[in-house]
Length: 188
Image (cartoon, rainbow, N blue to C red; front, top):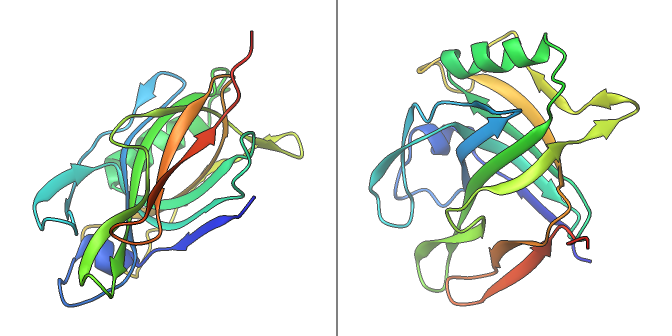
């Protein structure tokens, strides 16, 4: 399977400039263990220049491409979402079921437009917080990221392995070349 690695520009994610062609990513919604994170950060949607509110701005995303491979995300969140994440981090987090939706945008130099390069098609996919070495792959920084000074934002790291159901992720290699990839395997 081909890996999917996206390095997104935090500055462009928070302060979109239409003449810049950097990759941009947004976490549109997030819930961990039944606790919903607020979509409280205003951003520009690169494909139509509208504004929307998101949970966070992605800095990096990796998925090895296999049905059972976990997703690895690093994204920056608001002060309120930092508080939510810190509370989860310092509790038992006995329920690790996660629902997340995201969109990563890239620029198509031939068509001269931004397009959705990797996304959940505006639907939340179901994951479980991944474990690595017996520890949950979930962490929030105590320190704000100074790449963008305002609004204050904090890096959050999350790895999610698919729940036992077949789901879909949408991918594109240009504005016109699109495909669907399977995420998770249905059981029973």
